[in-house]
Length: 363
Ligand code: OGA
Ligand code: NI
Image (cartoon, helix red, strand yellow):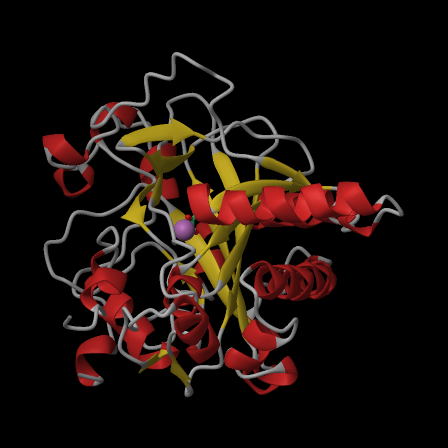
């Protein structure tokens, strides 16, 4: 299996180069089957207020006890009903967020030769990439990305991060450090809301300095035929929590809700939080990782920073025993390490929620 992962099955084409070349028709490998196109389960959103919840994190630390309680309840409901919410007043400097996003936009606008120095391979995915999965002839997504590891410290290798623009490495470190703190808070909140000890989820993920985190910066170039393709195919994120920073004014992210795709409206300076598969497993499906995808458009490029907060790779992740006891439930999932879990996606690419569903215990 390892050898199958060492190189891409076809020559890598940068979507940005295709877009810049001024083509009017996208190559066949980006044309999705009709049922996968953006119009499928269309998000005719008659009611615009029907969008993902907005949570004010500062309210959780206010002196007003009832406000704190209401906020905990709002988060609980968001986790159970949506698996997605926007987080405001999260404590991360808006300037730092904007600067980090700006530096990545600049990176993607560097000449191709510069970016190619960071070309990635399917062994670790670190670096500059344009596909996920190694299936020959697979339909591809209309995006390029940069993927880097941040924690645990021993796998952080800054020499694999962009050396240009010059402030990139420093900004990314600062930004990631701040986002890790937000995730730490959320892990506590989720634990308490599930009726577990405050540190439960963090410990279940391998504890303090063993947590795995990485950053995937997505670049969605303009697309001459946005109705035929997707920026990212439907998937749920494999890890624990994802913190997404999207462009303030260009939408594209869609969340699957009651069999329709809802476009998430950007709120400037907010983070989009989404619960990923390992939280579904630990919570025995009280929380659900939710399918999402990205649509592209013909007149504006889009940049997003997806920060992944994951369990340590080599410990078994399984439904919390205490939850099973309290709720008198059978475990819905078999234990599996995150490394094993993730290798499936790295080999096969994104396929909705098929991976977490395949983990189900026979009942
Ligand atoms: C991801 C993702 C959404 C976006 O990178 O996993 O879902 O809006 N990104 O770019
Ligand atoms: Ni995602």
